Image (tube, rainbow, N blue to C red):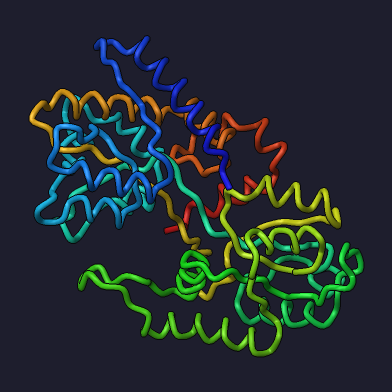
Length: 355
């Protein structure tokens, strides 16, 4: 979905500027090692060798595996985050939502910080506002009961502006993805991981309620699985489905699908929730620093990461990738991007209660 060439170009430019301008004469070499699965495999094969990189990017489960007994290849980044000399300014840390920072604290390793977030994505609900109006709704339903009613109504009442009138209308198009399911469980106030026991849980009341909603909506013909890659995005753009769930990084792509398709008014919200506040499913990889005998290398890549986290660089990264910045102040530098993608401001509000 995200153009990897754009990411590489940004990282190369950032690294070049850091190498030329940092006060310590540090020279960092940034290497693109493929997608996250490829990075994981390459890193595992280098554990215990002198070729292990000083920094690696990965999802939280991958970082945990890098630090399992026998591997133990990552440092506790709290040593740098809380360092008297190298820590970021308290105002900088306060600019990063606590929920973002909490994701890299691992209870399996004594609450060590195995990583630090460079960006995040959020599961959101895409909605056809013109179709909702035809169905008698003024806004996106915010609770599961009203959401289900709207979706079921849409499955029987096609959108008047559909670009594919021969297609059977869908209330909610739902792709079979772990993030999609997790977002519904969170919206019901549940969790997918019991941190105290260190295991996944899907048999609690909230998870069962989420599964029941999906199952019953599917049985009633109100929910349809997405069977093709980005098929839900295409059907949404053509006015075939009222709601879809997806990553916030897809905003511009959904916008293009609508412009090329049925060209209707659309908006976004969190997955309809039973909780008092929206509870978005927030996810993304983090940077981790490897154990090396030369501590200077750890400090060097930490300083590079601090440069990456500056608001001006975060804002530019958003323009390249459509990801959510971890620095809230970066949003103030994205007037041009937000003008092209007005729904991005809604994400800004949802980020406060995401987790």
